[in-house]
Image 1 (cartoon, rainbow over the protein chains, first blue to last red):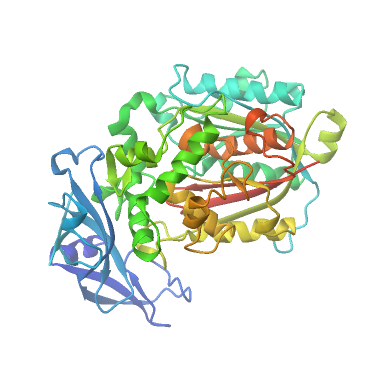
Image 2: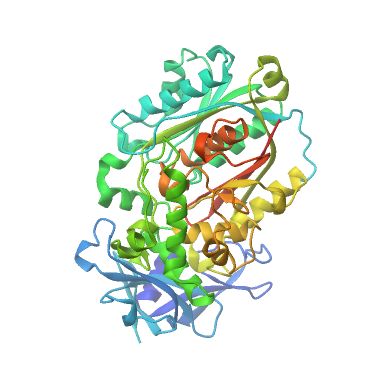
Amino acid sequence: MTIKEQLIEQAKQGKVLAHKCTKCGYLHLSTVYFCQKCGSKGFEDVILDGTGKVATYTIITVPPAGFEKYTPYAFVVLQLDNSELRISGFMGGIATPADLPVGTRAKITGFDERGILMEKQ
Amino acid sequence: MGSVTFVEKVCVLGAGSTKYGKLADSIADITTQASVAAIENAGIDPKEVKAAYISNVFGVADKQVHLGPVLMSNLGISDKPSLSIESACGSGSVSFREAYANVAAGFYDCLVVTGVEKVTHTGTEWTTTYFSYCSDFFYEGQAGASFPGLFASMARAYLTEFNATEEDFARVAVKNHDNGVLNPKAHLQKKITIDDVMNSAVVASPLKLYDCCPFSDGASSVILCSEKFAKEHGGDYIEVIGSGRGGSPAALQGREHMTTIPSTKIAAEAAYKMAGITAKDIDFAEVHDCFTIAEVVDTEDLGFFEKGKGVEAVREGRTKLNADISINPSGGLKSKGHPIGATGVGQVVEVFDQLTGKAGQRTVKDAKIGLTHNFGATGASCAVHIFQSV
């Protein structure tokens, strides 16, 4: 499996595949091939819980093609628990800002043609 | 620019644009129209043009990629080289930068730099979809993020972090439409009110339709040349005194702060350093206001205002035409329009017109130094240029 396929498999189980630099310890999403801090290539896999708080989001009412049937929906940037990492995803069933204040707890629940899927926790 | 030694000072000798808006002519035709306008404005013989730099993103949508040779054939100089550059909405300024570097290095003494886009015929749904391909698609576009959605995410982060309201963002749109009314080439030449913005349909909360620039067709072109070439040809010209580029994490999630654009800060720092000036020396700026939030963030990242204070400057009217610093005298992307491949070149056209006394009613009084700031996507790529009147 490619790294991206592994990331997708983990997302389907509600997890995030991260890469920790074996030289300096800096943590990245696994789609990075060289450490952005020290430039080193060696990483060890770290599996993080796909849980955290909504860092920011939007509710899309004018969607790109293929998303009409889900509209309105939220695009969410999630601040993961116990890490500096953030990850983005699709969250259905969000119609107004009152449905999703910044800081709301949320989790990764899967992956499909809408990318990484999230729900409120 | 480190230890790079330039052979030549670089000047803009002529400029031209089509109108921005929904255009009937083909992408090849409007590319040619803008280029011819720039050549005629410069008063040069087309055979003096040594090469063309073209910026364009979605030529495929109008059934014409490889635009360079088509343009050169139309200009009667089909033996001359050309290339196309794509850097999303920042294509124009990135292409300008590459053209600049080639003149500065002495490879060419005269170039045409033309940016173009032709997308409105594809309709809102497909233009929205095509533009989403400019994001880090795996994490953003694939999850249904449109560009209004990505900037809306920045806007919500800004509203959460700083003392700002949606009405403050609306003031950016009102100000840019006030300027755009004075620009005969602008796409949206009409005055609007804060209420018009607040009552317009939500596109991606908290951004509403009037917080967003329009989808536009259009082409802009400038003639870039060595100082020697400019002096020999007479006519009005301006000098390029600073050029900087920068990058940011492609996806918003990877940025330390979601209310600042790292590439803008890096590009601006390099451009100011090369010009030997600071943000305080800039008389006016054409900045990348694809959405109202973007102009607020840009004016902070360019050093005109402290982080979190850009919104106060707008509220106090300090960025209006001929106030403290005129931001987007052309009307900006918001009112002038945003043909994405053309925008960065169009900003240079505005600076040329301003600094050579051709900006009519929207003239920034006594302006000597102008800045252009143009980025791709949510600022993943960026170029900043600084120009001085001669």
